[in-house]
Length: 212
Ligand SMILES: [Zn+2]
Ligand SMILES: [Zn+2]
Image 1 (tube, rainbow, N blue to C red):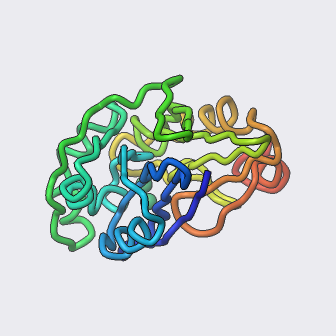
Image 2 (image 1 turned 30 degrees about the vertical axis):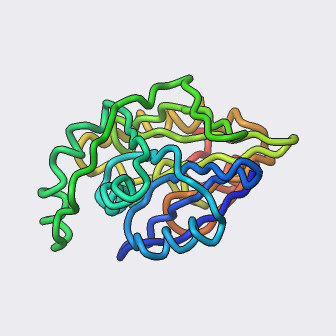
Image 3 (image 1 turned 45 degrees about the vertical axis):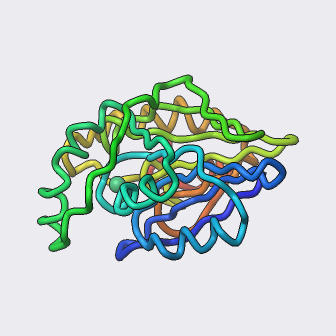
């Protein structure tokens, strides 16, 4: 399993390409923008995209889904809890002074406990509401190594904001405590923006997760 992460779009959303280089299949997580840069990496890796998935549907995480879907023919998926946010992309765009992206054909097939496959890749879906109602994290395990794509739910030393549409400060803490901090401590965390971290590091040092 090959994983690479690019900071894309004006807000630097971390878009990840998870690829099986032996079968040349890949899954893209959160293509928030910079379609050309993403497609250049896909071409360099020689992979075909089987699925485009989203940790949530804030505009900075879905900005070029439609273009990538058009060029790859891949299914694009969200959790149904974020459908309303995807339907209000023009409102999200207006808030940021951006143009609304073209809408993709998003299915709502991401469900808690589900599994996504491409070649030899397996990603487990965790529904982790709080940052948005339909926020999800994706866990990949291979040869003893684990990695979680946490979107804007968990950051290095911080957690996602909950003051936007459908955000819930209690729910995000519950999601992190019950679904993320229970992962192995050495699980690498690819966050939605900025640096990666580990579960052990956030358990020990994240000031938002201190038990009161
Ligand atoms: Zn977000
Ligand atoms: Zn974001």
